[in-house]
Length: 179
Image (cartoon, rainbow, N blue to C red; front, top):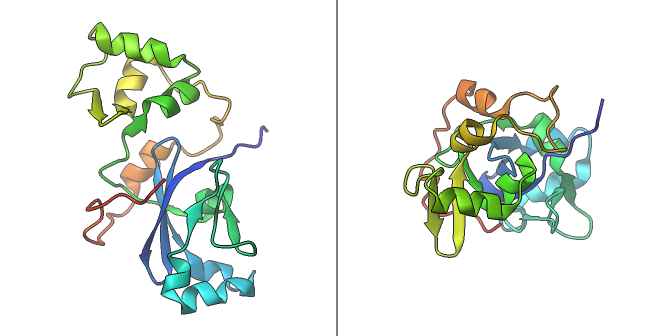
């Protein structure tokens, strides 16, 4: 079996014990930090100091999240031990991420937009300089994921998120964490 990395796009703090990670494929998972204490007592200061916990940020390439030179978590720890949670952003992908995941050239998607194959305001939207596309439009037009980072043995994230319990913290989505 091929080892798969589920790269993190953004990370945020939900409460004193919980992180929310959005992955490159658009799936979001919540991660309870308390599960680390039995295995790694060094994480205890994060749960005792909210300011320290909120210093979390995505490591440059997305293969993990870090707080400082000593505390970090791998992207797959968050993926494997996180709980899928539906968010308003689950079906959205940056054009650059979609091209990588589907193995396409970004110009292919830009042409699909200009020719109306991907419909502006329905399948794609422009936020400033950033274009986003829905996962459902990508599947409709280009089929299932073809990326080397997708493993057929992985849980289908979209289905997992739909089956997950509702995320009741509010107001999520009022602002997006920096990516």
